[in-house]
Image (cartoon, rainbow, N blue to C red; front, side, top):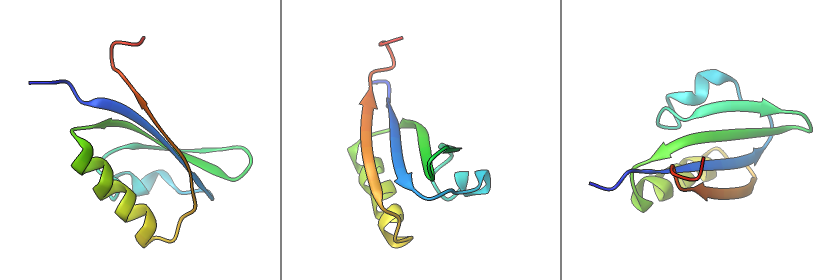
Length: 73
């Protein structure tokens, strides 16, 4: 089975860590400048689209989506 890719998704605004469960267990990390980074593994593209739908449902502004291969350390 293929390993999941690691994603880093940036949205405008600060979200508390308690949102991690809502975002499928991804780490929720507020940063300076009013940005929150959601990061962690997603199993497939369907999981990514589900997460993006949740971002849209909360009316968050999507800044960027970056995919990293777990072997790129």
